Image (tube, rainbow, N blue to C red; front, side, top):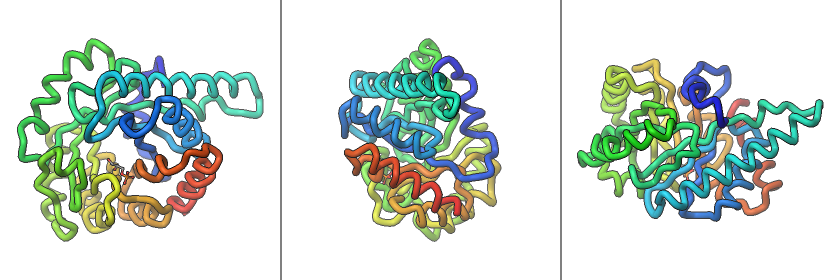
Length: 270
Ligand code: 1GP
């Protein structure tokens, strides 16, 4: 979505009839070229955002190379569609958004960044220090900040461990509501309920419902979602966005990935 950075917050937060899907690309798990092919397949399937980041082993180099490769690939297909009256160029205008492990894993080529507080971290590093360390860089690079409360639920995975999260348990609906309201009072626009990449159980529907009933923020849910049916439960509980990382990264063949994600998105909103 190069050149329209200021629109990214609107794109993410404007109410949408359907729950939308985004992929998470971890630059530590794949080459920039593979990441770009997966991003193009996902957008062709109907994904509306590409998140780039990971909990470990990302740095300025692999994040930047990955973001550039994805942006170039999407620009190329957008241009090709603009030359064909049967195709709609604007379908390819999806934002590439940093989802960083910290201030040392950024890219000026990104459209936006989830500028987040890991709200249930026990470490000041993830509550505020990494954000302060990255703020001036983000401003200078004109990467649009998406103010977000990041809330890690059990089992939490690597994100929970690295982020020293005091995990929210599946029955802890009052606690998740309190975090959702706190996020709203801080002025955040988004909350991300995270179960951890590869989680055996995704965020419980009860937690999503409790968050939905407590605040008017955009709710993103991810971690352990591999089936359209699971995504549908999260969507019906109140998720505005569903993120898949592992599912996307399990395909090397772009056509197969596109087919799987098309089916996933259709089931999610069925
Ligand atoms: C991790 O929520 C994301 O931050 C994605 O999780 O890899 O399990 O899809 P998965």
